[in-house]
Image (cartoon, rainbow, N blue to C red; front, side):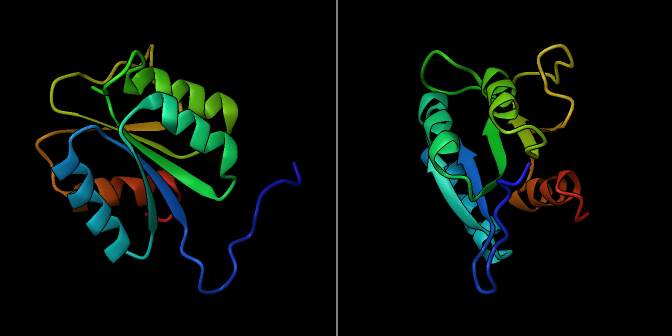
Length: 130
């Protein structure tokens, strides 16, 4: 596959964060940006999928399970990995339990309550930078 884009020096790696709670997504984005990532934010799985299709520079996905719209985070994660095989995925939820039948193999699950730093640690692990 020759379509992997090398990030240029000075460019920050782009992480797609999908979460419909405004405060949660802002807090997590602050943590990620503080760690050197650029974040793209989406409140719905449908928008996230279109971003994944149009932005080859997205290097990882963090999604909540409960999202506005018809698609939940488990379905989004599966679709994302079909679109972008090998994409590192972190699934976060305070209500749902990890569901191995619905989670892509590459995905890691983080239970809330957790801090943004906890999610960042898991993200680094799934990206192989842990």
